[in-house]
Image (cartoon, helix red, strand yellow):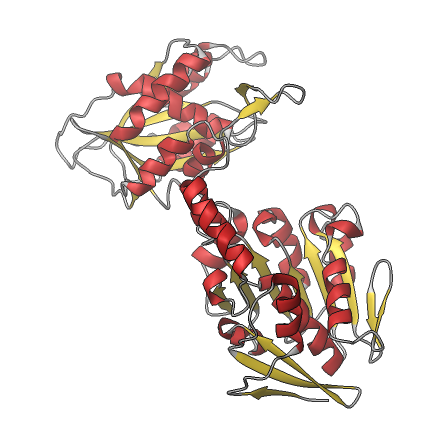
Length: 459
């Protein structure tokens, strides 16, 4: 059995015929691969951008919009590679409640199209090759570090719909796939740029990653029926077109409360590098939490705008811990703005957050109670004045992009904002709107700093 590239071919192939049968496209290919399966040659053609599939690389990331033939091509490649030599292949996704959620059906269809039914035995929960190749299926969310150990001997992992995979799942999966030469393949239609997958494998790609952005225009078999649908979508809803068809990440999830405001922030390039200005004090705005996230925004105000230069979010940490982390930053401090509950005493100690911070020589102001909906309206109004640091405030931007309302399952009407991981950063944004009129933009001595009180950290 062998794998050999064929250049300059114009003959129709099995892959070309399969895609053409389904989509009605023309039989034009960019490059081809030949395989021998049980002494018969099988020719598979792929879009030219996918040459990297056949070069060794730890991570292979194929991303883009609808119609790029990503999943079809990967399914074909894995099947013919598995027929060329024994491989253990894991087909994974974030959530797999049943085999119907997996690519099992897609692989079965491609086995029939490639006429490999005599080589592969398709079972209910796995696919076996005559040479020992084994294709397994799993949902990553249901696995832990311990339960996923059974996949240590995997050669190739294909993660379909990888845009939905959580940071926790990647931390479990990636170290487990440790066989020499093992690879992790991803196919995804991007959702948010702040998603764990996009951030880890695309924004922060390293030398072990092959990136392939592939869209409808890169698919030699892109059919006329989809071309008409693409153009209709562009006319009907140009805002969502760029994500659905061109694979550009969205700035906010569908239905996000601040979706339009966040989109405008990016379009006007006010999400960027925002350096610390030593001539201005740094004010902090807090959303208090313990089991829930504590969120803190670091804000500098000028006469014409305000800049969010940093953001901190964590849970189950004391106020002393946060202040100790803050005091490591080379900032000239202004006021710590707390929500109204900052003046409420803790039921265990009787002390308020305001008292604890003031004991550490912080200057504190507690904001008055303000209605939630009125606060959201106020928060919308401050976006045009804002500059937000893209990297240091990535968590804040993610919160603003995801903050949404509960939907009544019966009426489908939106209700109160959902209390979830996005709500804490969004609450901080509301509190910034309330605190802005009180923020001093004094351009004092750039060398002036409030004295550090390290000894108070031992409390």
